[in-house]
Image (tube, rainbow, N blue to C red; front, side):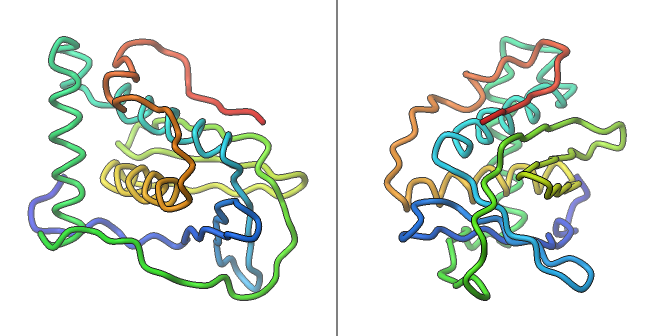
Length: 177
């Protein structure tokens, strides 16, 4: 992470819909808007997979697995502080642009890229959406999705994210509905 430089802006947003009891991922694309919906179960899977990806792609945590939880916890807190400018991140109330079709996410695949970024690929029927994010934004994504799940009162039993996500292993995290 570069000191003093904020993470790159993300071109997507998450929204919680009380009427659907789902989280919508809204991604404006060229000439179109793509919205896919995460169920409670897929959200829990996404959070576990994100924590696993973050853990497995941190070289310091891999070198010293006995300190992995501390290393990853510090990295997470630092990403949040840098992103917020020290003010703390808060969920912002917002509305989806219009009534949109329910395209439920059926499959999520996360992969660590060699440039230190992570790729999240989501499939909802014939719709496919791919997000490539720097490490800092992976932490922000984790924090914001977890915040929405708490706002929805889903009471997901995830445990400690870095304890539950061993920093060893070579398979890529996947979530399938």
